[in-house]
Length: 261
Ligand SMILES: [Mg+2]
Image (tube, rainbow, N blue to C red; front, side, top):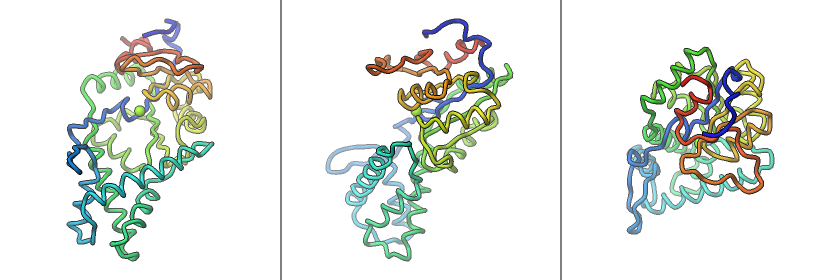
C-alpha cells in the first residue's frame, strides 16, 4: 500500500469495480472445450448446446465458436473506437451473431439470440467467485456507516444484478451502475459522477477501487475522485499516466485505506 495516512475519515463512500475486483472469474468453473486440438474455456459451448436442444439448425460447433469469437471481436473493436466511450448492449452483439448464422431463419433469430445470450450470461455468473474475506470487508464498511457502490463495464444489466444477488453481495450495495444501462463505459466521467450522486457524496468523498488502470484509475481521476488501484501483480503505472492515489495488492487492503483495519 502506498499513499498518505490522511485518507482516514475523508471518505463517505466506496465504489468498487465488479469483475476481477469485487468478484473473480474462476476459469475452472467455465466449460472447457477442445477445438482443433486446442483446449480453451468458453461459454460458447453452453450457448450452442442450448440452441441445439431448442431445435435450431446450426453449423458444427467449431464453426459456431469461430463466428462467436469473430462477432464479439468486431463489436468490441467498434465499441472501443467510440471517442466518448459508448457501450454496446449485449442484445446488439447477439443480434449480429444471429445475422451471421445463416442456418437460423430470420423469423427465429431474435428468440435464438436471446437464448444464446441468456445461456452465456448464466455460465458467466456461475464462473464468478466471491469469498468470505470480501464479505467481511463489505460488512465492516457498512457498519462504519459508509455507502457502497458498484460501477461496472458490462453489456447486460440484468446479469450484473443477478450476479450480485446470487453471491449475496446485493444487500450490502447502495448503488449499482452498469455501463449498458448508463449508455457509457468507464473511463467516461458520466459513470463516476452518477455514482457519486447516487451515493450521496461529492466525487472527492468517494474512494474508487478497481483493477484496470484506464477504466478504474484514469476514469475517477478525470472527475476528481480518489482511487485505489488493485494491482495484484505489481504492474508498472503506464508511462506518462498520473499514478493512483493508492495502490493495493489485495482487495481487503481497502479497509486500511478507510481507517477500518
Ligand atoms: Mg475489473
